[in-house]
Length: 347
Image (cartoon, rainbow, N blue to C red; front, side):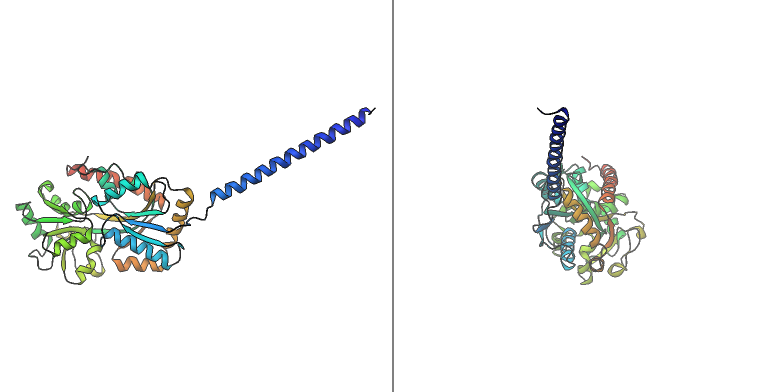
């Protein structure tokens, strides 16, 4: 028979073995769980080609921004995967936005470029889009540009006021055009000076095209008298002597190729409009992809290659990271809503 001491020793040994076994099992599970979490947290994004969409035809501000963005990312080797640009025109960006919000909400490999139309299209009454910046992941603001009131070089109009005097007398006499739908950015740029000059903006004849490139073609072809567009998209046409820019909607006169172009404000018309351009991802973008692009874009905007590209395109560098950009969009959303309400174009 075992003594009480022997029985006690056996029981203690068994308990110790069970305890060690449990600790070992728990440790194994924790290690496995830790490895699994690490594997889940880092998939090596990006592992596929990245598509950057310009929701317009070729030649406009979105297209140029998308191509500059992908070009410099590739040149600086900040992104090792292939980068392509896709043009998806329609409805001043509204057609692509509907597809992106409903069919690409988790597509980490598709980014897109946009500007104030992502807000305007969502707030305006005509051709209203149910989708806006809240259906995306704002990644960064890259640049700012300004609106331009443009005519052909051989136009009889030499300054903004001579144009506005004709429009004030008969708002339907001239055809204004732009690369976005009625109530969208180019339309607002086109009519803003006239509105500030006391003209009823609803009476102005405005024709929309898919992208700034098509609007410029219409102007040069005689199918429009005036276009409202972003200054950077007419830079090459100005240098080539094909167009005359009557006014820029900046606070102060620009430098470089636009140094001789007066602002609307200089000409006594208080019409200011800033066009920002930024990069967006899908609404349900993974945390890993969002972090990757935040870090990558932050590096991009500090490179001399990007600074040179911005200067070459006639833009102004104005970088906002994801957090600041989102806050800015919230503020601009309120501003645009007020402007559309004043013009009777709000939904």
